[in-house]
Length: 486
Picture (cartoon, rainbow, N blue to C red):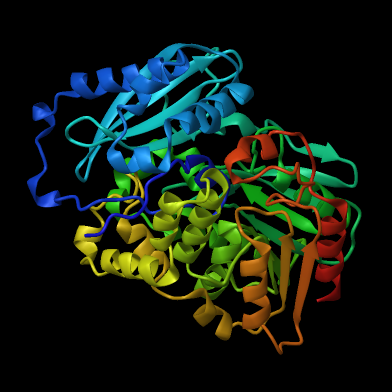
């Protein structure tokens, strides 16, 4: 099986629709027994890598990379494009806090939690059998000051950082604590914001997250785009429901219980439908005026959520795309390598592997795997499998859209470097051309979160989103007016 490019993309995955499909030809029929794995060997190499890069011994860190990783990440970029960027956000490195291990489909993974001045970082290092790093990801930014070691991290259901002890009165509306899927295996806490003082039945909105594990506010550093949207709409007569994403509230349980069966239905679709049902059953909500607002991955999936049972009055898609998810991954990879590499033969060779014909052929080869094998074949050495993307791509977005007759509002920021306006926004215009119930809005100067761009690029994603900001008021006004006009 052909190898697809492996590179640092976990931050992109956390904030947006996804990135790459780095994987190899793992022989799942000849896996080692757990007791035969020399984890001390891998943990020592993980510790050596982190310690070396933290002490500016870049040569030692670089020599621990597999050949393909060395090609894509010259030694200088380990310092400038990885470590310096992280240190700028989380503070100086203090110590290694914890190392946990996991084996999956031919890869040996070490999750290294590092302790810094401001907040922790969880690195996921994916090793080949001979101890070379073939994948490098950032999984999370835990608060470690009062936290137990990760091995003692509680796995029971909790409100986490969004606990609501009582009903909260706000200016012009009231926040009510709710539970999405209360009778399901994965109940999720959320907030239903109800406008005050309205005699008539209210329109309402379900907010659906981007990829990654997000709380109900879709918190990204100091920014809370879902709270911005909910507060504005509720203050203007539109009820809004938002909730913790399932893989945020049940990270450990989902990995253990669902395993290779895990799909976007489990991650996003089912809970959005349950939220829609909850709104429609509410005595103050007009069941015929319930809308969906999907951001990024949520926008990608909104047509499926509607078709699978959401049954919305209209679809509001923020930074989405009608293209296949692997097309979005390819576009992100092209942009990344165009940004980080100097012109020359090496760059040309990498971009040649990312032509649509070559990339589609590589993805098609993965998708030809039988489902049972695809469920056991890791995409990035982590939890996502070939089956996750195969199932997602089984029915193209265009096929869902063809059968949807309700109105669309398509919104896009011009400075979004994760979902590109000149590709994806244009694709929506082409797909929905000729429909009289579609509205397009392109916002100059706004990024993927529909906040003012900081002028950064895809390698500076943390710097772009770490500046406290709010969703642009014009965007919020346009959403409000569109809902009232439909």
